[in-house]
Amino acid sequence: MLMATTNDDLLEDLLRLTAAAAVTPLVEPDLLGLRRSWHSCNLVVVGSDLAEPLARVRPAHRPGVVVVGSAFDGDELYRCAFDVGADVVCRLPDDEAVLAGKISDALDGATRTAVTLAFVGGCGGAGSTTLAAAVALLGSRRGFRTMLIDGDPLGGGIELALGIEHDPGDRWPKLLNASGRISAAALRSALPSVDDLAVLSWDQSDVTVLPPETMTSVIDAAQRSNDLVVLDLPRRPDPTAEEGFIRATATLLVVPCDVRSTAAAKRLTGPLRTVAADLRLVARQSRHALSANDVATHLSLPLATQLGTDRALPLAMDQGRFTPTPRSPLTQAATTLLSLFNPPIQA
Image (tube, rainbow, N blue to C red):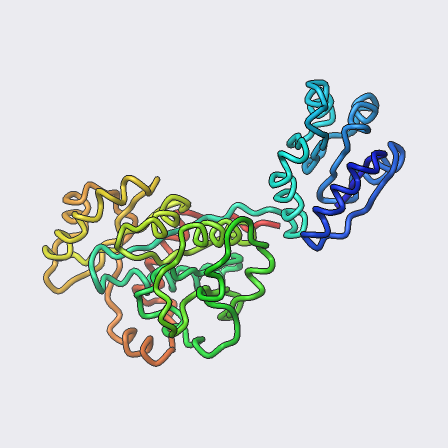
């Protein structure tokens, strides 16, 4: 991170913000140093005192430039910011939070925009947690930087199925007071993992309430540090779960193909449509079978994929051995979903 200003008071404010974020910036005190280091850092913060002289020399365009001034700087500050190709103008102290966010991005490294898939069961025991885990594992094994987030405090705990309940790392109760901006790098490094798949789940404590602002902060951090984020969310339409649906690229409603399950899912689709931008159906085979197309028509939802039955899987999950075979129905459904949404691997 580069900071350039001749104004000692402004520099003091900037150094205070970087110290709070545990970032050590490169400081250049003049235009020559700013131009010399223009391409060397992922974030460049230019004081208002140097913005105009920098604009006059027409620097090469680059991302990650912030022009910082005070409330007393006039509209000329915006013209200079435009001329140097700045992403944003921050007036201190009013815009300290915006600038702090940019500094945190510099700490996290290159900002990612993760494909985020939310899974929810259309009825109890639909298999949405199992499919969420399968998609996350498959995505990680295919080279996507992936995080799996268990958003259901009353579920069984997705880490039990993965066999990592005794592994060290943070669980939701450790994050209950988190709000605002969370360091993406710190979140990922604090979690237990399966191979390279980071997992945020619940421990065996009595904590069952998750504040919406905590869910928001965690998902935002996850999206900044991953290619793929998988959310396993509860059926109840509470404000915390809604934060997950709102931030998801798509929501996959898993529904067994029978009359009672379809009727239960019908009651859920209305509330989901108000918060999910892209709601699709995963039709799960059932002994009392309706066709997948019948279920999709009744729910008025596009069919994302069908999910077959793997009779050996429930026992394996009870034993903490969640390893779907390459030809299993679960792997086939997960493969289809990854192909549909195709997360880009970020540099």
